[in-house]
Image (cartoon, rainbow, N blue to C red; front, side, top):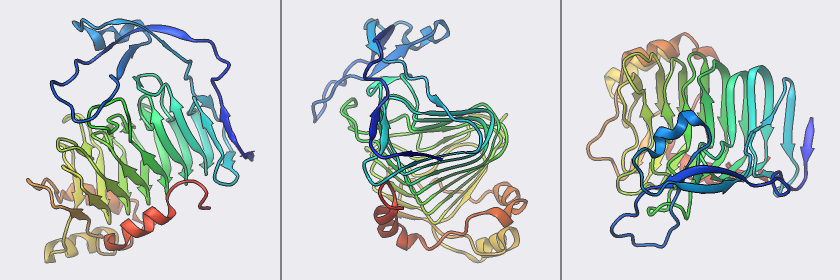
Length: 331
């Protein structure tokens, strides 16, 4: 076990690196002052990101290669002021049995897209990410990449998307979960001030989202992006979540199952697949149009693994419970 009792600045003494990059054109009007977000080109195969953009120039940044975590490791913060600044963690090459708890993971090339991710899980299993705080991340807060993952749980974390680098004040690059196989659970997390990719789901894994609080998007923002094309075979179960001031809670082409209110049909479907009722979600206000779906394929996938699934409580208790329990200093 590795215990951390203060905030460690991992890049304070690292030299500056330089890469080409570009910024998007500012909108004609913006009701708040903000700084332009930079799209970094850190390797040759990324040059297309700024193709045709007249604002391409050189930018400085800090090396954000994640800290490698080996198998059978627990990294835990002591108290409420423990954390790592400037670097995240990387779990790959088949590592397993890893716990990361009670840490603030922040300020990874803030405002520079592709400047680093907070936690990368690429080919790992038996991972528990719990009671952490994420903020001011250059790109994704959580990314699985394209390696298999299994039995990954993200619970009781606060993902803070407030940013001074976008006109709408909310982070777009939040969760990119694209595992070819495996199972990922997100439960009891507080995801707030986001404009998209919260989460973006792909690959062929099974995803279960239960009792999360999704809060605040701009008027054109969205939470779930479920699937990117017909070649993907992912399945997603969304239950017992609370969407507060979220413009578009769900959407996407791949199978998912979620509901706002029980019906005789959903009672029968859920009882057959899960051995219990599905927990309804709450949206305040309700989205227009409503894109929630009840795809039987998602429940069929859940049926195969139902013995190991989290059982959600009522969505009506989510807002109060998650605010009280998510984040650091609460274990």
